[in-house]
Length: 351
Image (spheres, rainbow, N blue to C red):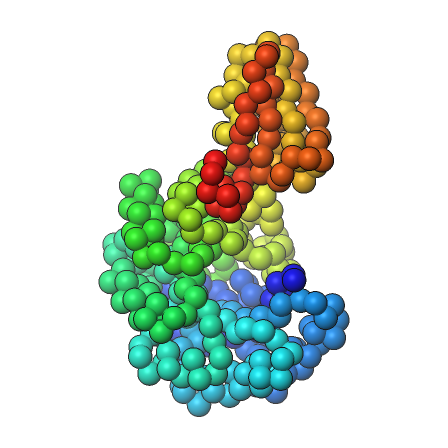
C-alpha cells in the first residue's frame, strides 16, 4: 500500500521565536495558514483524486503546532480526527518545537489521533542554537524526545546543515547525540538565506558564508550514512521545491537544489564504487535499472569521474535480477558485491 501525505500548512503559526533563517512564506509557498473548514476540503480532495489502496496521512507542516492555544489545536485537529475515525485517512502527524512539548499537550494529541511528531531540532550544539536564535537548547530536545517516547509517539527529528558556527566537529557531535536519542526517522535540510530573514542580512553584511551545494551534499551524505548505519532512516534531504523557492530572487544564498536527495545518493554510490575501480585497466558495473541514475549522476558527472579513474575502459550494464541498492563491480576476474544504497543496508542489515 502506497503511503501518501496530505500536506496542511500553518506557516509560522504558533512560533514564539523568529529564527535567523526563517521565512515560512518562502519555504512553504503559502502566506496564510490553513483554516479548520479548509482541512476537510483538502483531505477529501486528496482522497478523491487518489487511488483507494493508499495509506493516507494528514500532515501539519510549518509553524509550531503545539505552541498554539489549545482551542486552536483542537479546531485544526478535529477535521483530521473525524476523517481518521471515518476511515478516510489512516494517520495524523505534525511538526513542532522541542520546547513546546509537555505531558498535557501529548495527552491532547493522543486524544485526537496524532501518532507521529517531528521536532525541529536543527542542531544539538547549544552555541549554534543560540546564534540561530532558536530559543531552545539541546537539553530541551532530549526532554521532548523522552516525553514523546514515553507516550508511544513515532518521533522524527529535523536537522539543518550550514548554520552559522557549524564546522565538521559540531556536525559530528550533533550526529552522535542524534543517534543517542534513537528517533524513528530523520530529515536533513540545508540552510538557505532567504529574503526577509536575518540570515539574508548577515550575507549582505558579509557576516555569514553559506555552504556550497557540494559541501552540503558531502555533509548530508555523511549524516545519511551515519544514521542509516545506526538503523535510523533518513526520509528526506533538501527542501521541497516550491514556486517561491524556484523564483530567482527568493534565495540570497545557500545550497538550494530541487534534487538534493538524489545528488546525495549519487555521491554515496560514487564513494562506494570508487575504491574497486581506481587504476583498473577495465571495469564493468552491473546494476539494477533503478540504480542506473545513481551510477551515472546528474548530467553524467559521476560517470565521467569513473572514466577518469580507470586506465582504459569502463562500461555499465543493467541486470533485472539485481536488487536495487546492490551493484556488481567486475575488475579482471574479480566480482565485488557493493552496496550503494544506505536504505538497502538499513533494510537488510547484512551489507
